[in-house]
Image 1 (cartoon, protein in one colour):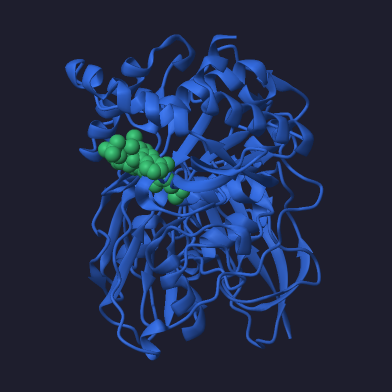
Image 2: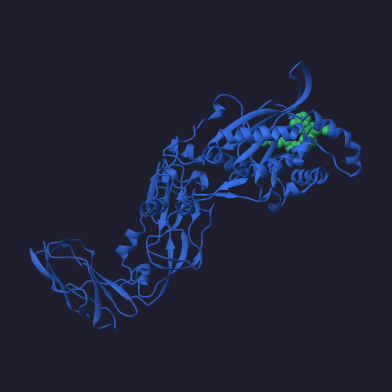
Length: 525
Ligand code: CAO
């Protein structure tokens, strides 16, 4: 046993340097190279590593002290019998680390950050580059993510500094020692060799094949969230349950942006008061089925409109308590009138279909039943009743469903409405509708027209509170009190938001709508 002194080694020209950290205390068992204290000048910070292993017997400095070369730092009890008196510790500069020398650090310097030891892996895919030139990064920030078929790994930054040049891009293949980037180490930062080797450790997440498969085919939250260590760390800090985050990264990986979006949405929901105390739907993850196991399959890409509609429809369906009411409107006279006006319509250059009457009649019925022309306020506390009557109509296009809008339908005649329908349908099918063409609807009509069906449940177009589904008209026998007579009957399916519209009101509205269609003169009242 021997007691050895540890003193401040050669620190260049610096004198009376501040002790800013003392990393050991009496009784600590220290290993050679452990950081004992940190010193800081106005130009550099330096660590004093232990020159040998042992047990700390006395700490001779405290934070705030000023020390110079040879100042006593510690007394350490070692196993060594022969004492190598006052063994000085050494300070490695950043460049010294690179060069293997033991010199002092400059105030700021350029470092090359390389791929650290990543085990037996070689030519590993770079799947994420998380920094760009100019970024100010902190020690431990993730620089890039690598992925093999078995694991994903992050390269954390060993230092705080400013990225000067990034040498890798997504898709590159890298191995140990390949250059990742050059980093301008922030002023005053000093690292010891010990620090570099520790900081450069690669974190690894082993993925089970099941998780991998789920991640590829699903963008929905799942319980086996696939995320890099940095993202997991971020999620821990922010308190995010990763199983609820929708992954958009490669192979179903949850990215930092996904976490950001999750937080953004959560904050928005809080601000709009839309967070339910029930804590969400708590649904099972979607089933992950390998359909190819059962037969031949073909995967078709969804159009942008398909994807957008899917999100909107799903939200509307789960958030709105739909109730659908069915009735038949007698449009015998309407059809007679429409046919009688065919020549006049042709002269005016328009084709008039029942849809124009349905839109006009809707504007009338909405004026009589303002609740149908409203939206729930975002805080759920009020009803916004609109004094304009803009009617959307669902239109089937090669790229998917769109809903152009006839603005101020209450103020327009049948020919004008017909002309607008023709224009909007043409634009829709050519993919030329502008956002303004599809905004502002207060009520929507979804007409399957001659396509068929006798009834269906149209999904309400949020934030509207009702939608009229129209099926194929047919001549049916109707009892007039004395006999059955043939009448052209149009099946209607009215879906309403039960939060806003009670059944009784819905029944009244639908009955009135049928009455207007049965006798267009009702619109004059
Ligand atoms: N019953 C019977 N015939 C009908 C009808 C109905 N309900 N509605 C329209 N028709 C007739 C028209 O009168 C026309 O016949 P004539 O030429 O003899 O007059 C013919 O069907 C063709 O009409 P159309 O479909 O070209 O025009 P439209 O104005 O009726 O409809 C549009 C336009 C854009 C609504 C329609 O083309 C369309 O895309 N419908 C699909 C909407 C949809 O997909 N809804 C479902 C949403 S839920 O997924």
